[in-house]
Length: 298
Length: 280
Image (cartoon, rainbow over all chains, first blue to last red; front, side, top):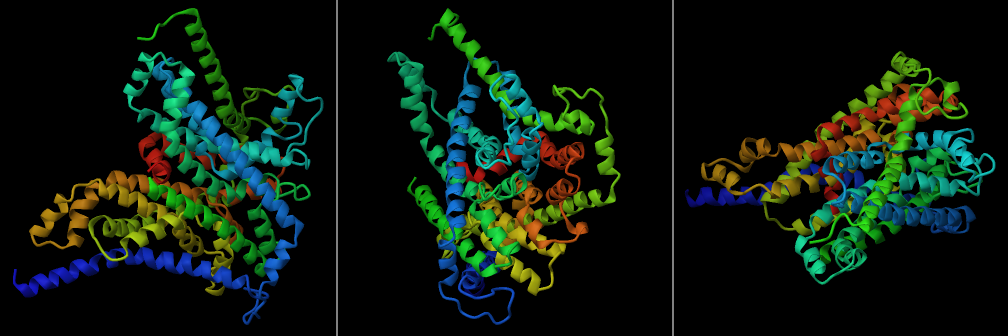
């Protein structure tokens, strides 16, 4: 190669990666970063989106939200919904993964059950919502089974009484989300070296001791990173709650996403909705930074 | 060696199998109930005591869905949008992944962190500015609005997935093309793409699922019945015919078919797509 050709080649190598990345960066920049800036701007404007020349509102919309008891109720419901979901996703996922990984069951049965235990994962949130509405109808099958077993005395309106609605949507979400943990933990269990357990056997360790001192510590990185992701995603859940209860009755299942959606598209208060959306964004960003730091530290 | 077949040991095995059956009931009963209800009449769904198997097996609910052009349109829209987004996402993500995997350049690390962090941006945060944009560019209630917005959510994860896959391929392959005087572009299409089909499959599956499941944007950025997707269609059905539970279940079964089929046919790609971001 002549020196000229070589420098031409080098220039090409230097520009090429940016060219390959440009479509992605263009889309992420224009349709993700720019809208994020826009929503922050909206939250400081009066009549955002609706007016062409909105006036500056300062912190008015944030003050309005923080003064709204429904916002605080939504925050609390989101926290309850999310924490319960993550804890039970993890517990059920772990129990199922340990059961499937046991050498006491025959391999064919294991494979069949593995497919069946993943089932809830294969259904869209809307469909999950519709299924649970049918199951938990006052005249539905769950009430009829529970009454036959004598657990409840009369029909419970799971989704339409304020005492039970939040628990009911949380339960439906727990059912829908454990397979992510199960699949990841199952993969993790298969990656634990067998000699760890053999060494423990020689020392005469009991099954629960092996669980506490080998299995759980070995799975810890997976447990932490999936819990963080699950927390971030569960916090954002919208369709399941929207379809089962719509945030009601009397705000008893209102979460941050339904609260924001209603502000924007039922009351058309897009400025205040933007302020609420920014609050959600900040919470998510905080958790995301934590997640990225954790991933990098590993 | 552990001792087997002691009475205590046998008891543990039995207890484990009881727990497995309980787990199976928990995981599968709701889905079984959906399936069996879709073959029942509306009166039988709420029969007391509940009938586990449909007593009078009927396909009337399915006939009502398949015979209604409005509902078929929901399915067409869902397939069309999901397919379009999948093709675009795979193409664009492939290019970006190739850049990340085969080149060293300034800002690589921070761009990578940016892409990882965009995965967790709450959809509800972007919804309001998207609504503003879509209305001001007059693409409200069109396929373009849905395709563009879905692309933003599928792209980051797809890039990570594809980059991860390309990193597993040996570099000698594309360097051989460079030695022969070929450009990186030729190397990509002649060498990399043909052996990246498993990675492309996993990315496609993931993207398709995300689009098929999407609810919030379809709800807000479309309005006319002819533009609605399956999830919104199910919600509409619930609003209009609140008591046609068998039709809702039939539509849910039909709406779950693509995911179930992908899972059964391509389980490996499905699991790779669903867990790649979280197990790394």
